[in-house]
Length: 79
Image (cartoon, rainbow, N blue to C red):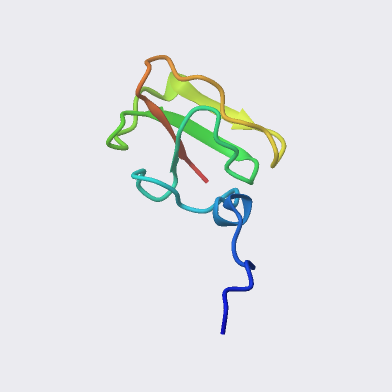
């Protein structure tokens, strides 16, 4: 049977809130939209938490995560 051309599009393969790339589960890059509201704390690229003063609150499930204090840092979900 010939390929009908149907399949996944890039948008379907990169759904919000799903684990992507090299990040540990629950760790997101700045600009990512985790797909849920809640508390997030800045962490190192390896997922180690930084000081609690770097904790933020996303109020809406479609909000992107803000930039981190250092270029390669990430955000870890706290709840």
